[in-house]
Image (tube, rainbow, N blue to C red; front, side, top):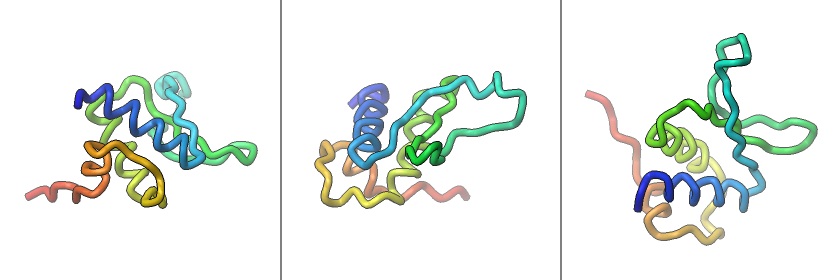
Length: 91
């Protein structure tokens, strides 16, 4: 599965779990900001820095989604495998 497809599937999963993924230009905020989950006006949002590489976007979103209860939600097998994989430990 291509990284762009994985990102779409991860975004769709987040949406199924009630979290909207929104890409924003975080460089224009004027403060040091990074991608992450927040609640604005009662709406759960995951703000993603649109300048990140697709590989980094996938890793960031995977890390967040691993904390969410997704076991009872349909996830394509390739993405389910990524969700179940443990992150690599640095040496």
